[in-house]
Image (cartoon, rainbow, N blue to C red):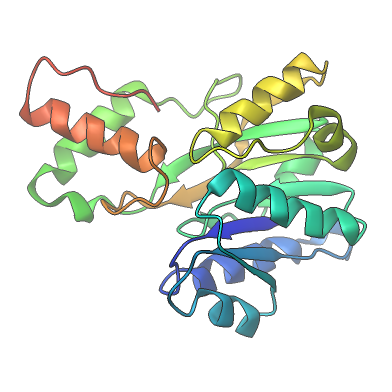
Length: 228
C-alpha cells in the first residue's frame, strides 16, 4: 500500500496502523503486505513517525501528490507487489479494506469514503454533513474516485502508465487511463475508508477543496459547489 504525505506527522501513525490492521485480515491468509509512505516536501516528523510504525519511507521534495503516489507505487512494484492499494495520510482504512478490494475479483477498484468528524467546520458542521449526504451515495456502481480508496493489479497499473505528475486529480486521471487501456474498473462501496473533513487540506482541488466549496455554497447561496 502506498500513502503520500505532506506534513502529516500528526496523522500518519494512525493511518499506517489502520493499514497494518487491514494487512492482518484472515481473508488474506497471511500474504505479505508492505506499506510505503512517501514523505513529500515535509518539514515535520512524518517520515520518522511512519518508519517507527514499520512502514517503508521515501523522503522527496516534489510537493506533488501525483509524483508522490507514483514514487510509492514504484517502490512497491520493485519489491514484487501483485496488488497496489492507495490511501491518504489523514484517512483510516477499514480492517477488511484490502480483503474487500481483492474479493471483488477485479483488475481495478474504486471505493468510497466516509467522513469521520465534521467538527473542523464549526457552526456549519451539521449543515455540511447533511449537504454531503444529500449528494454523495456510497453504493455499488457509484462513480466516485478517491486516492484514499483505490486499488489495482500491478499489471493494470503498468498498462495505464501509472500516476500522472499532477498536483490534484491524479486519481481521476489514472482511472481514466485504466479505462482507456481496456481495464474494467469496479466501483464498489464494499472497501471502506474513513477520511478527514479538515479545512487545511493538502491537495488543491481535491476532496478538501470540494468540501470547502460545499461549505461556501451554504453561506453564499447561488454558488455552485464542487462535486465529490
